[in-house]
Image (tube, rainbow, N blue to C red; front, side, top):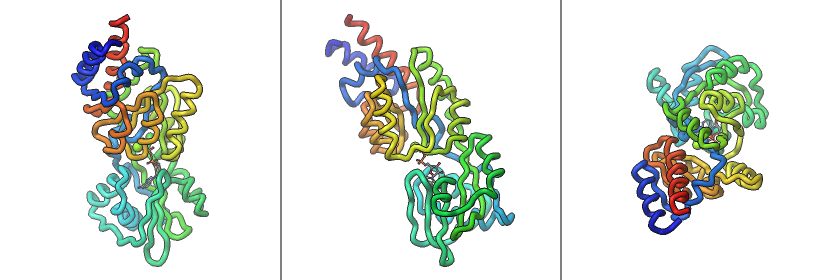
Length: 291
Ligand code: ADP
Ligand code: MG
């Protein structure tokens, strides 16, 4: 495209709330044939809420107090959900020492001389904690597209907390527009398979990869580029920065973290996925105009 038509295209995209930070992104955007979406905060609102609290001994208050004690120290969107629930129910968080967060796994600390952990099943099992007793409660959570967070004190599982994040009202329509433009849509998430499957079905996504550790999201992008796709990656979090940088075009959700915004060629100021088909359509029109 001529410098003039690129300028017009960049201006047009800005009108739609898509800020193009890297000049060549507008031209590349028209060639995108695969869009990879992060789940939390990208397809979903990013403000999950607690849907269920299940304690093995029936003491839900004690369970929530420990979970909230841990999440007080975390900045993950899941932490916000647990803390809001504790506050609503008037549950005082326990004092936890030695807090540590494990990316894509969960959070850990010390309470009453024992380690306390809240996170996904795979991580707790890797730490030698059996969670089989909580299987039915966890399944009820994933069936509703929620995420089960298991809590263990020492090596004993005490319960599971269900957290669900609503899909943004317009995500499905934006994904449908991508399909109409002949583009394949995939989701990558650190969340478990059952939850990823339920969210994909609700949002109309073609394919997904679940239980992808934050550091491996970029590898999925590179793998798909290696298969010949021109890949757009859309994300909002710190975790997403390497994947955004690895894509042909990175789209950062403007309401996300600064790190994500700096790593992406295009920032979507309106927080809506419609910005992706908007930018692609403008790019295709810009490039066609000068042919
Ligand atoms: P996403 O791809 O949805 O952004 P993450 O990679 O941040 O997910 O996290 C993946 C999984 O790790 C979560 O679904 C959860 O099971 C666990 N996890 C991460 N952080 C926390 C936390 N603060 N509290 C509980 N669980 C967590
Ligand atoms: Mg995320």
